Length: 370
Image (cartoon, rainbow, N blue to C red; front, side, top):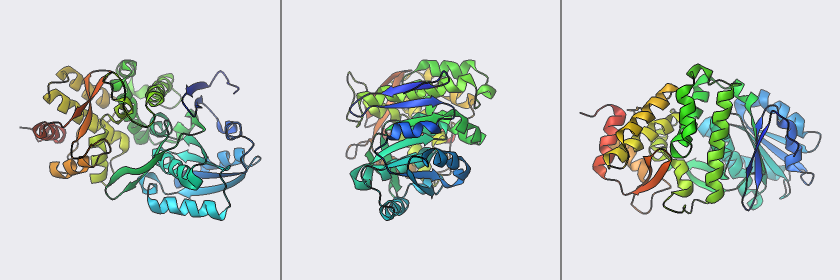
C-alpha cells in the first residue's frame, strides 16, 4: 500500500489482517482494498449522506458495477426489515460470494452494513468508510456487526472483520457539533480503560480546539483506534483476556447502562452521550463497592463535562433501566456483569454487583440521591 505523508496506517493483525487508514480524501483507495476479483459493489450509505456518497460511487464506478442503497438514518436502520430489504436488493442484482459491500455513514450504518455483508451468502467482503468520530473509533474496527430488537440493542449480530477501513477526516467537517462531541464519549472511554494520554490531551487542550482538521482531534482519534486494535487482536470474539484483564469486554465500559438509556429514550440519547453517562454510573458503582477511588470518579465527570458531554440523566426509573441491563450481552444467566476500573487503565469485571450499589449509583446519576 502506498502511503502519503498525510496518512497514518494502523495495522490490525490476526487471522484476517487488514489496515485502518487515517487521512484525507481516501475514496480512491477503495479499488486497491477491494481487489480485481470483485465485480459488483453495494454501497450502503446513510440516506442523508447522498452528497457524500457520490464521490465514493464515482471512485468505484470505473472498476465495478455499483449498487447504491440509501438507508434510514441512525438507529432506525438497525432492524431486520432494513437488513431484509438489502438482502433482496443484493439478490435481485445477482451478487455472488466474490462481490462486496462498502458502508458509508456513522456507527449504525456500519453495524447494519457489516451485518448484511456477514450474512449474505454467509459472508462477503466489506470495507467501512465511517463518517463520524464514533464510527471511526468504535463501530468500523473490530468486526462486530449487529441489529437491534425489541428486547435490546445489538442482540442479533455476527463477527465479520472488514477488508479495510478508511477514516477520512475530511468527512468529519460535515458533522453537526453535537454529533462530533457525542463521538468523544467513546474516545474518552478509551482513555479511562487503556490510554491515560487521551485524558491528558483533553485536560490540556482548549475544548474549542477539538474540531475537524485540528491536530489534537486527529491524535485523539488515532489513539482511540489503537486502543481498540490492541484489544480486538488479543480477543476478537470476546472470549476473555488473560491475567485478570476483561479482554474485549473492556470496550463495553459504561455500555451496560448506556444501552439501557438508549432503549429507554427510544434512541433520542446519542450513543456517545449514553456512554458518557453510563461510564460515570459504573464508576460510581465501583466506588461504592470499594474498588475505585473517588478521585477517579470525579475525573470521569470533569473530563466528560470538559468536552461537552452529559454525565447525568433522569429520563427513566430505576426498575426500567435495571430490567434493560439484565439482558445485556455481558450477563451470564441471571448475573449482571459490569466492566469496572480499579484505577485508570486498570480494568476488571465485577460480577453480581450489589443491588444497593446499583440503586445508589442510579440516584447519583439522576440527581435524586439524598
